[in-house]
Image (cartoon, rainbow, N blue to C red; front, side, top):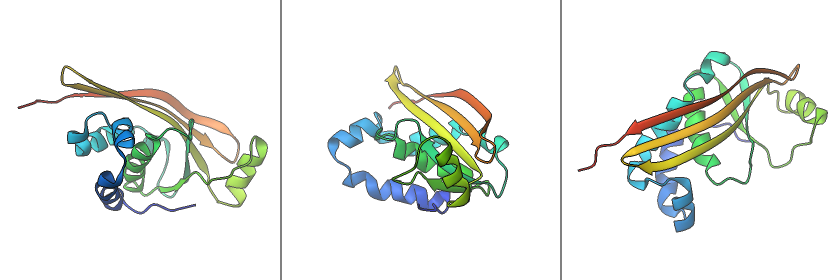
Length: 162
């Protein structure tokens, strides 16, 4: 399990990793490669409401609804930047986790995580210079398994082209 450090480090990772990605991963990850910085900011905008549901000092595990989705890492980087900027510790999903009740016990005891954030992010692409993203977000208290907040959020922005 890795603790991700601040937004600057996350963005630096994005910039350094971008050229190393294969063509299919680049196409899958972002349909607008010339606007990577804008894409990163747009994802952060999707997560604006989350810090209101979490508080400084919370230990949060990011849990994708579809762990096989290659786009998860872009969303996780921006989400981590948004949350760590608010003083919230963020952990990525470990490789092996038990299912059901054992999952919550493992998170609380072994990882000392008090909240879990489940997500599904979708980049809808570009149409007439309009970029749209949406994300399903759900915050769960791991001690009592209550869903504290769940919502589908959308973000869109218009880009001027030369």
